[in-house]
Image (cartoon, rainbow, N blue to C red; front, side, top):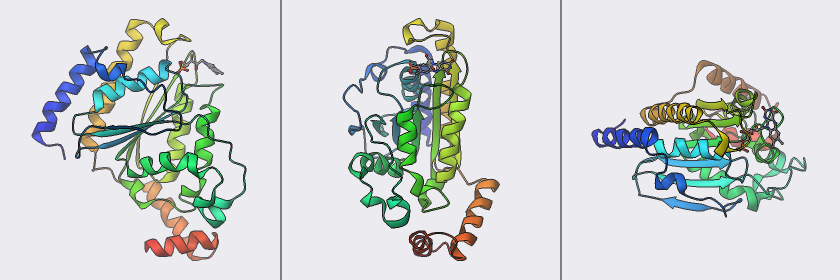
Length: 270
Ligand SMILES: Cc1cc2nc3c(=O)[nH]c(=O)nc-3n(C[C@H](O)[C@H](O)[C@H](O)COP(=O)(O)O)c2cc1C
């Protein structure tokens, strides 16, 4: 539910989105945050927002993400940003799935990001389009989340989260990329994923036409309004509910791993 005071903040956020291109938040830097934790706590209530960047540099996708953050974040919110760079490739050892995610050889790199995602109300995942797909770095992070898929040990709280998938591309492919991200998040159990994607006809943000930037800003403001409005109100759709039930049947019949079945029992789902 949005309180009356939040309507004021929402109006301010929207005004910033539409008129305040060079607001301080837009200029905030994430230069040194490769897999490191940047605590941007602004208050002790409101929404918790976690941002995962699929690329370290401050390109068009990063700037598009700033447009959304400028429109979305209020004084009461808390937000944390991470980059997917530098996480080693998944080595396919199956340790997370069969044994325990804490024993993953890369856990020290992924754990702070995963914890922030699991504690967030809103998750923002962004990546440029590289060869009609997300960056390898981001895919590497998603590979480390295999154990959190609905078919293994999904986090129950995922059903309350809203996500935004963001991508830019020079010509084609940004839509494909946000769809790829949305698919991953769907299988984690997140019920609502907004998608902000655009062909920007440029290799650099400075070369993006002002009218294209304006369209991005308007779309970002629309998504910010919907996100804040639906915060705490999202529900699983029929497809997700059906798949969850199917997975429960699978776990109950012993078709999953013993580790997964024990988790489902602990959660009281089977
Ligand atoms: C390795 C690489 C692969 C790319 N592949 C494509 C592509 O398949 N199609 C396309 O239209 N643009 C492609 N681009 C262009 C980028 O998607 C585009 O410039 C994007 O806006 C860059 O976002 P960024 O500034 O956040 O990195 C590619 C760029 C790079 C560096």
